[in-house]
Image 1: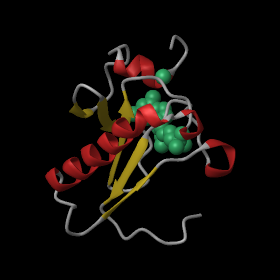
Image 2 (image 1 turned 90 degrees about the vertical axis):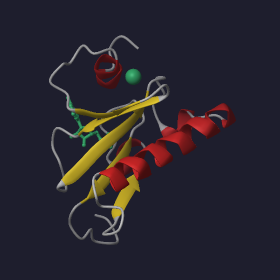
Image 3 (image 1 turned 45 degrees about the vertical axis):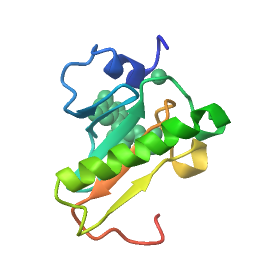
Image 4 (image 1 turned 30 degrees about the vertical axis):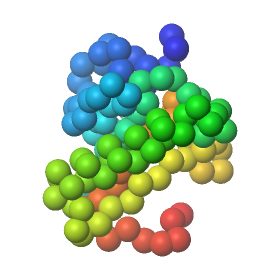
Length: 115
Ligand code: 5GP
Ligand code: ZN
């Protein structure tokens, strides 16, 4: 999608991005404004604006994002200490980029409930 920041990152138009994962379905890269020592975004290569726009055809893709995050978490050495995966949807959850992405947060104790 032409005006989408994450589509541009996927297309390689923003070379400063620090990619940590790349496969046929998604990429993972460091968040520009990290909220924890490890903060990585997993983004499907196909543009989907919000979780509301996912269909049953995206089941495998959504599972794939979670497995990619868990794999990278283990590689980064936070599998045992723990981590959080979260996907924000629309205003009340604070979604700011309208191309779905799974946050992987780790490296410090994360409070619950979230703010
Ligand atoms: P949301 O608030 O939509 O769930 O998450 C969007 C995330 O994208 C935020 O954590 C924000 O810091 C991150 N972000 C926004 N613009 C950029 C960018 O240009 N590069 C990277 N690496 N992350 C970005
Ligand atoms: Zn997009």
